[in-house]
Image 1: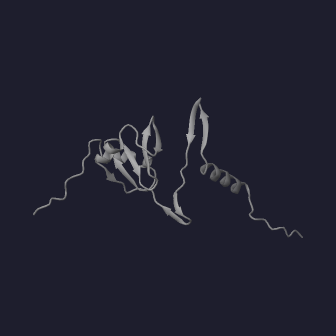
Image 2 (image 1 turned 180 degrees about the vertical axis):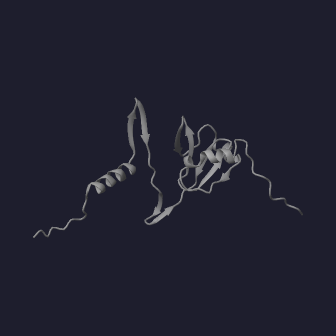
Image 3 (image 1 turned 90 degrees about the horizontal axis):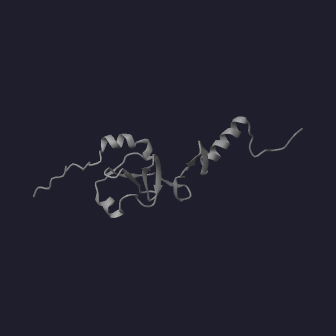
Amino acid sequence: MNNKKHFFKTNKVGFVLGAVLLVALTKGVGYANGQNVGITVTPPVVAAPGVVFQDDYVYYPNYGIYYNSSRHQYAFLKNGAWVSQPTPQGVSLGVLQASSSVSMDFHDSPANHHAEMLRKYPKNWKPSDVHHDRK
């Protein structure tokens, strides 16, 4: 009689899922057709054990830049690829913050919504003046 206890059992499906998870949780770099290809998976922002913040974005249509207030990162297209970094590119922070902006209602990557945002908020978009103060 075999009384060995295993921490977990694996099969081919479990092995494949574990490998996919490992790849998804790490940053990998590879080469395709001589081009350097990087994959970056950013984990959720965790303030304390068990507390996770959602990604919230502000979009600056004049510059095509998104600001992630949870991560304090700016996301934008650079040479056809999405980049996230702590400072915006091509515009000073003061000029960007003084330009028109709109809060986004999605919490995943701007890449998933950018085509729609370009239609909805064209480059020279300005918020409508809906509040008229009358005294």
